Amino acid sequence: MKRAFDPSHLMDITPRPDLVFVRGDASWVWDQKGRRYLDFVQGWAVNTLGHAPACVRDALAQQSALLVTPSPAFHNEPAIALSELLCRHSDFDQVFFTNSGAEANEGAIKLARKWGRLHRGGAYEIITFADAFHGRTLATMSASGKPGWDRMFSPQVDGFPKARLNDLPSVQALIGRQTVAIMLEPVQGESGVQEATPEFLHGLRALCDRHGLLLIFDEVQTGVGRLGRLFGYQHFGVVPDVITLAKGLGGGVPIGALLARRDACVFAHGDQGETFNGNPLMCAVGLAVLHEVLADGFLDRVRTTGEHLGVRLRELSDRCGAGSARGVGLLRALDLGQPLAAAVVAHAREHLALEGTADGAGLLLNAPRPSVLRFMPALTVTPDEVDLMVDGLTAAVSAAGSAV
Ligand SMILES: *Cc1c(COP(=O)(O)O)cnc(C)c1O
Image (cartoon, rainbow, N blue to C red):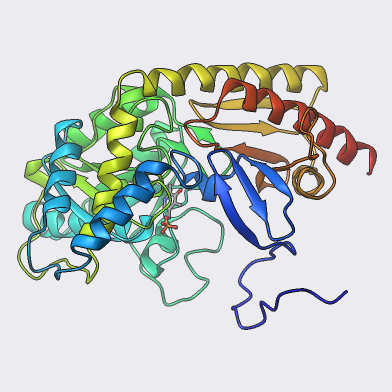
C-alpha cells in the first residue's frame, strides 16, 4: 500500500507505526486521517498538562514576542524566575538548565567528578544500577544498566559500577576509594516502573553520609508532579544532594535541569555550559507548567487519580490473573505475566474502538518490556478517562490473549 507520506529521509531509529499525528488536546490526540486516540503515553511522560495546554501556548506566544535567545552568557528574566521557583519548592540552592534529561544527567556526572576532584582526592566512580536508564549520550549510556549499553559504542565512559536496586549490600560492596556518588531513579521508569523502597533510599542516604558521597536522584521521569508530589524524593522522604529533571518540566517542550545543594555546586567558570541553556522561551514554559502544578489542589488530584488508576489496574490483574500492578501516582505499570505487551499496544492503537466514544477512538499505550505495560497519562487526566482506558485495555488484553 502506498503511504500518503514519505518518512524515508528520517533516520530509521525505531519502528514507528504508519501514522502521522497532527493535533492534540489534553488527553486526546488525532492522526492525519482524523482518528482520535486516548493518550496514556503523552510524549513519554512529558506532557504534564496534556496536549497543547493553554498556559504553554500563551507562554510560547508571549515570550517569543519578547525575547527568544539573548545568549547563555547574559541573564534573562524567565531563567532567573524559574530557578528561584524550583529552589523555593525544593531542598536545593542552585540550578543549571539543559535541553534534555541526558544532558542534565551528564551535568550531574560532571558535577560529581568535579566534587570528587575537590573533596575526595580525585575519586570519580558513580555507583549506578542494573536496569537503570539515564539517557543516550555516551556517558549516560554507560551509567544506564541496560545490558550491553556500556559497550555499544565503545570506547565509552567508564566509572559506573552497577549495584542492584533495593539491595543495600550490593551497593556497599562497590564503595571504595574511587567512589564519589550514588545515582539512581527513585522509581525506575524505562525498566518497567520498578520502585525503590523508602528503606533502601534511607539506607543510601546513610551510606552517602557515612562515606562522604553525593546522592544523586535522576528525577527526569519522576519529577514535576508525576508521583503526586512536586519531586519524587518528597514522596519517599529522602533528600538527595543533586537531582535532575527534564520530561515533565517543559510540559512538552525541551528543557531539563540540574539542581544541587549549595555545597555540591562546585562548577567553576568554564566547567559547564550549553548554547541553549536557560533560554527564556523554554524557561517561560517551564514557569507556566510549574505554576499549574503548584496551584491549589493540583497535586492532591494527581494522588487521587493515581490511586484510582492503581485500583483499576489491580482489579484488572486480579480478574484476568494477568500478573501484577505497581507504581506510584500517575506512573504505573501492569505486568501481564506473559509477553503480550507489544500485541496489546498494537491492538489498542489499531483495532480498538473505545466504548462510549461515538467515533470509536483508539488508545495509546507503552510497552517498556515484553510483558509490561506502562501508564504515564497527563497529570490532568480525569477519573472518567482512566476508566475509559482500563475498559479499553481490558478488551485489548483479551483480544491479544486470544490471538496467541
Ligand atoms: C527519559 C529519561 C532520561 C533521558 O532524557 P532525555 O530527555 O531523553 O535525554 C534520563 N533519565 C530518565 C529517568 C528518563 O526517564
